[in-house]
Length: 270
Image (cartoon, rainbow, N blue to C red):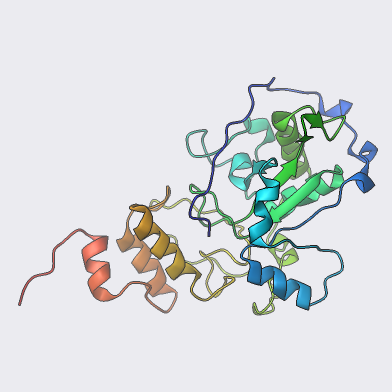
């Protein structure tokens, strides 16, 4: 998970455009190759070892080459979120259960240079991992004649997501090596009161029972939370988090950690 996820401002551009004026089939699809970026680097190496001819990968050390790319998270299109909670588009372009993999499909369809970072997470959307980087301008020159700017692209993506809504089998399209093979969607855990959690999540979401790129992803998440000095938005308290993990068949925090962090009560001295 990213320790320093960045949130960038959308350009101050017109809010509306006529979707009927845009034809994605006119995009020069061969002009831009999609480069899925699997992070951490070990995931990329595992995919390459499995010989997937449709994907190319770059090492995390080369990620600086994509700093000029625009960043898009699924939460930007989440209909259940307010602007303050992370949504970036008008409700007419927002959907339920947006997934990063579907955003990649839209960008590829439109012939854009696209980088997919499936394990990167928006700080307000911890349960829905996935980040997409898109190159709109290079050396100040637009890379797509029909897409004016990032706001315009996000409207195109939102329209695509509305036309291709996620369903319970959509997450099965993205699989990681060494994950258990699944022919049906993973069940969601019990959601503590006050949590905001989508009903359709990637298979490697830390919120899914038995899911995850690593068995330690939840512990890694909590380690980062401790280092950052607080919980991400949407997580009421560590006590609720402990309850969810107990319901999944195992605790994340030790009893001492759970009692001191979850309800704020001090341990009594014996």
